[in-house]
Every structure is written in structure tokens, then in C-alpha cells.
Length: 314
Ligand code: ATP
Ligand code: MG
Image (tube, rainbow, N blue to C red; front, side, top):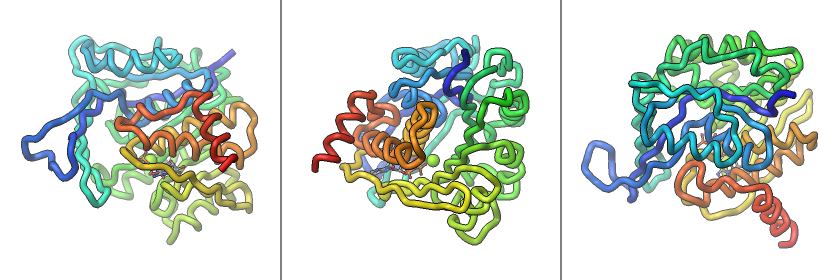
């Protein structure tokens, strides 16, 4: 029997400013390390909610590598496909927040362990029978070998495996044209897509996200547009509907989209309706922003169910 969800990508530790408005080019205090990496955040959330999950990636033989791997293991993720590189350091992300809500990231990824990912890290025989193979555009943007590893995972996917695509694009790294070309082979095979604001318009070339999401849905894909505190909008066939978000106090928004995605896929593996998946994922996303650190707020199954219960009662 295969996994419920397998993903591949940079395993990182995040180190963040303690205070707002402390840019990264000046001395000030940091806090961390917090386990991070978009695909790892998604998978950790799914595993905490009960999905059978496996991670593919590369870490260094160092404290940060153990920090992120141990967290995934603690929450039940199969880490046997995480390779420990003898020389490269584990990837890091330094982040500062501004009072207007914007963020600035400094990544050590391309020339660190995450940049060492290779197509050989994908073992199709181990992925056979998996329900969902999850791809992030961020993994593909690391370097050519990472993109090829993703293409291999998608091309060798067994017919019963579905493919999930989260664009997670950092436009500062590549031109729109390059991003579209990079993502196209995965979008073609994708069964579900999780765009954030502006990604659907950008990737499809449509004038608006609404048009972009509808064009993907017309191609037979389920599309889930993430809308921050508003919740999400789901497209399936010619149908589209909003699932309202939950009101919480936001402490740290990083990782909400990934936590949301992990919860949504978990719901799908359990046979929930799209609307129920949307509600389940909105709750996980909302709970994730209440704590500092991208994985720290991810709820356990019991916590999420209690949260939903509370919302119904109020
Ligand atoms: P990121 O890339 O930072 O992880 P994203 O842009 O992909 O985020 P968002 O739309 O910010 O994704 O958040 C994903 C989901 O998390 C939303 O659809 C919503 O369900 C939930 N969420 C995010 N922020 C909040 C918030 N402030 N209050 C309530 N729910 C939130
Ligand atoms: Mg996102």
C-alpha cells in the first residue's frame, strides 16, 4: 500500500527577526531556528492530521538538518527518502516583517543542501500506489536538477496517483515567461492546483485570477484559490463557490498556504466533499497563523476538530 501524500523540496530552518521593521541589512535580534520549507510545512500539517506521508529532500549533516527532520519524524512523516549530504549545509531562510504586513526573505538554498537534490532522489518504485504527489513551483525554481527531479516524479507517477500543484512562485528569481515554461509540464498533469492571489492570472496569461482558475477548471482540474483571511474559492467543472475563512488573531502568516494545502489533501484522501475540504483547510490555515514559526501553529486532528466545533457553537 502506498502513501497518502509524497512531496519533494527544500528542507529549511527559518530564522526570523524578533521585532517588526528590522531590515536584514542591519544588526538586530533574531529568533529560531524554526523548521520550514514550503513542501515540508505542507507535509507536516498533513501528517499531524493523520495522513500517511513521505518526504524527499536533502539536508546537511548539522543541527538545522536534524531540527527539521526530527520535527517531521515526530509528526509521523516517513523520512527515509531524505538524504543527508556530507558537506553541504542545511538550507536556511532569514525573514523580517514590516508593519505594513510585507515580508522580506533571504534564502540559502541554491548553494546549500536543497540545491543538491537530483533526479536520482526520486525512486518511482517507492512512490508507486501513492494517492497524491505534491509539487511546489519553488522546488522547480531551485535549479535545473531540481526541476528534472520534479519532472521525473510526475512522468513516472503511476496512473492511480494524482498530482497536486502549488505554484508558490517567487517572481524575483525568474521572469514570468521562464516560470510558465518551468511549470507547464506539471500543470498539464495536475489534478488539483492551489494558486495564491495573482498566480492563476500569471500562469495562464488570463486577465484575472477568476478567468485563469475557470480555464484550468474547464480543463478538468480542481482549483482552490487561497484568499488569506477570506478563506478560499473552489472551482470544479463549471461550478465555483466560496468557502468563508475563520476569524483569528494573526501572529505570523508564513506557511498558512502550505498548511492549508496539507489539510485539503488530507480531506480529499479521506473522501470529504470539496466544500468540507475547504472548511477543514481554512481551519488549519487560520490556526497556523496564530503562532510564530511556519510549522508551530499546525493543529493536531483533535485540535482542529475542537476548533471547528467551537466555530459551529458560536
Ligand atoms: P503563504 O504563501 O504565505 O503560505 P498563501 O498566499 O499561499 O500563503 P493565504 O491565502 O495567505 O495563502 O493563506 C492560506 C489559507 O490560510 C487561507 O485560504 C485561509 O484559509 C487561511 N488563512 C491565512 N491567513 C489567515 C488569517 N489571517 N485569518 C484566517 N485564516 C487565514
Ligand atoms: Mg503560497
